[in-house]
Structure formats: C-alpha cells, structure tokens
Length: 320
Image (tube, rainbow, N blue to C red):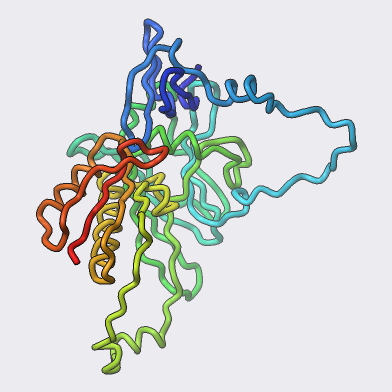
C-alpha cells in the first residue's frame, strides 16, 4: 500500500484515499468531505486489486491486430494554466507551472504558513512552455502548505486585457490523487490541475441593457421554479471545480444551494422537500439544522434515512 491508493474498509462501507502510513501497521484514510479515520493495514484493501480478484476484471490479451494510431488525450490539448506534480522518482515530485496558452504569463507563486507568506518563485513563463517551481516529497503530503498563484497575461499586441487572476489552493488527498494523467506540454504522467479561470468575452449589447434597463427589466414578473423533491448537496453534484476549493468555499456553495431550493419549495407551495447532505463530519448537517431551527414557515424537520446515505438526509415539512 502507498500514499494515494484508493482503499475500502473490510468491515464497513467506507472508501477513501490513504494519506499517511504509520509505523505499527497503521494507515490514515481520508473519506467523504475530508474526514480522516485511522485503520490497520489488515482492515483495508486496495479497491482495484480486490475488484480484479473478485470480479476477474483484469484486461484480457487480444489475439487480433492492434491499431498503431495513438489515441488523443484531451488533457494534452486543453488550453490554460496548470500546476503539475511530475514524479522524479517514487518519492520526489517536481512541481511544474505549465502555460498551455499562446500568451506569455507573468506569475508569482507563494506558500503560506499561518499568517506568514514565502515567495517560492516569480517571473514570466512563455506561451506553450513550462517552468519548474520546486520539489515536493510525496510522503510529506500532509505537511504541504497552502499556496497562491498570481497570474497576469501579457498582450504582445493590442488585445483585450484580461484581469489579474489569483488562486488560493489547499490540496486535499481525496481530490489530489484522482487527478492523474498526462500533463499538457510535458506529456508525462503527473497529478495536475488547472489554475486559470475562463474569461468571458464582453457583450456590449448586454452591457448597454444593464446600464439602461427597460421597465420590464426593472420590475420583472416573479417566476418561481419548483425544485425536485430531493436535493443532493454532495459537492461533486454541485460543481466540477471542487478539487481546488477550500472547505469553507464548499460549505458556502452547499448552503447557498440549500437555501435557494428551500425558498423555491416554500414559494411554489411544496409541502415537503428532502436535502441529502451525507454523513461525513457532520458540519453541513449541523449548519442546515441550525438554519431550519431559526426559520419560520416550516412545520418541522427530521433526519431521514436514504439508501446508500444512512442517516445522511434531512426531511423538511413545510407549512401550508
């Protein structure tokens, strides 16, 4: 077993990623919502190996001819700014900043420790190139500090100026070890993530409409959309960009989705709605129940059992 392996507990339903190997045959596993639990190596099994043994899913040898044409990897052609962790050996990983755009990028890379900041590198990474930021020891993954990257895209000719972009990131084992593939430009197996945001083209007509709204825009007719009977608040159901979000950012998005759907349920006349929040460390459930306890317009709320979630859902009964 190694750090980053996906494992399952033999005497439970929990699955997670190994984040730490300790002496005495113990491991630390990060499960749903970043909650970590200790376990003995004898109590866990690597999922891929177990499933191959049980279901006989190992790839079969083909007796036919194989195509010699390489398959295209969308990750290699995706444009953007990326940070990649490329293995130098089984323990040391090179930390690379990749610019898979045509524009040059002025960057500054800082690591954070409590209230202190240390600049680890700054300069210009040219379009369609990459630069090394440093090295990281994979066994020390839990001690890797949070970091921020500031990016300024440079125009070599007259063009629309993109805003300065800053990303604040704390890597989590549950998402880090899932993002493995061939990194853009480097074309090597690595753990990599996109850093830049997609910049939308300015719509002049829409801007004029916002600056000079019509009476219909100022006083629009109220439209309430009736939400589904159950709302899944697991973060991977709400956004594809949760890998690099902090715990507070994920909780904020989950609570915003909860409040919006609850308000729509009340306004549309629903008598009941279920919110699936999972078990995890209980922070989301606690915040939902606190919000509901202070809200008028509902009869009651209660924990409700949902298949595959245990007591990971809350039913809200709405006043008629």
